[in-house]
Amino acid sequence: MSVLIKGGRVVTAADDYVADVFVEDERFSLVGESLDVEAERVIDASGRYVLPGCVDPHTHLDMPFGGTVTIDDVESGQTSAAFGGTTCHVDFVIQGRGQSFADALDAWKAKADGKQVIDMGYHMAVTDLEEGGTLEELASLPEQGVTSYKLFMAYKGVLMVDDETLYRAMEVASQSGALVMVHAENGDVIDVLVKEALAAGKTEPIYHALTRPPEAEGEATNRAIQLAHLAGAPLYVVHVTCREAVEPIARARDMGWNVWGETCTQYFFNSLDDIAKPNFEGAKYVYSPPVRDESNWEYLWNAVRTDALSAISTDHCAFLWDGQKTLGRDDFSKIPNGGPGLENRLHMIHEFGVRAGRITLNRMVELLATNPAKLFGLYPRKGTIAVGADADLVVFDPERRHTISAATHHSRSDYNLFEGTEVTGSPEVVLLRGQVLVENGELVAQPGIGQFVKRAKFGEELKPERTSAAA
Ligand SMILES: [Zn+2]
Image 1 (tube, rainbow, N blue to C red):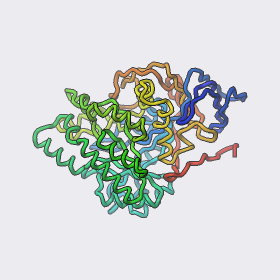
Image 2 (cartoon, rainbow, N blue to C red; image 1 turned 60 degrees about the vertical axis):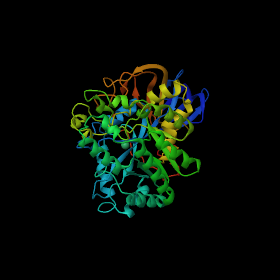
Image 3 (cartoon, rainbow, N blue to C red; image 1 turned 90 degrees about the vertical axis):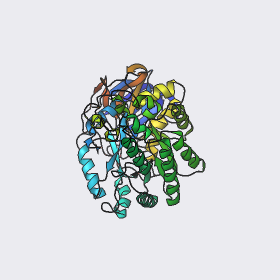
Image 4 (spheres, rainbow, N blue to C red; image 1 turned 45 degrees about the vertical axis):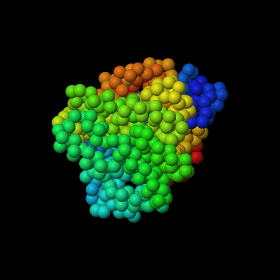
């Protein structure tokens, strides 16, 4: 299948120019002015942006959590991603207690089999290095294309690891070519605060936020940074929400340490006012780390603008409000943590980042596609438009108006964190490796089209695979 995308404004992290883009054998083959080539399919992109397919480095699909399972499986989650212009994501395998990494990986791959709509990779969430996986097995994962380890410093008694386990994983990563990711909140302190709140009869959703203060995030972030530096491991701090956590990341980056930070779409828009909503509606905004007060919004915009934070993910972890979030109606600590977001990252960041003048179009592409691809071993096959790269792209209409709503989104969640928000600018056509995924508001491709991507080790490039005639 060959496709010619004509006359669009091609925007990458570095460039911005009008050109034709020719796609053949799943990859970008030619980029130039007025290309004189025959194509099986021609897409007129005049007046549109041609963006690389976005890469979401942080999602949770088909994940058991908090006594239930996320409402989006691989098919519904990835469909929602495709409509939002995301063509590749990296999901988390969660190692069970006592489970080997190989068994965990097999179990998660089985959940994706035949359901994949976009391309994907996996991070390994390490929960047990005593009864379950061994250090040797952990060290072998990057060879299999799983080139990042995630460790939870929170969720005591469930996912949380102690500093010994964290540090051992960092030592392994420093040798194996993996990037260490941390959920940085002090789980011991949060556990005390939660028990105190419940003992005082404080059960409303707002107490989820009030028992997870910014100091707990700032402390754990700094601890992870210092430990990673000691171990010589590169570190990526996921879902940074506040000044207390940005500051130690910015300081480490100023010193030239291998530290990066990510925030998520919702932290620019949701606040304590949302989680305080009456009649249990606040439960929609229960995710961790929690919503913060509004003063952090501009602070985070500035952090992504200045590269104190280098990526924006969604941490898509969707539940139904009615039937799942309600497990915690009488006890905020039983509300499943997480929210939907895969579909609206590009919408929201384009509207309130680019159109509002906070970041440039190039920086948007860098935050949503190029940097995640580079940090997680997908670049340059993913995250840019360049000859030889996978032809994942978004024809984006900057004038198209769209109202975000659970009534029209493709997640199975019964609510949307940005309900009713009107944006100008929306994906029109989305291609995955040269095949049309989304067009005219419809999913055109069949599930099964997406592939598992064996990612490159940290700091290495993922070379385009020569699969067909082009070899
Ligand atoms: Zn997460």
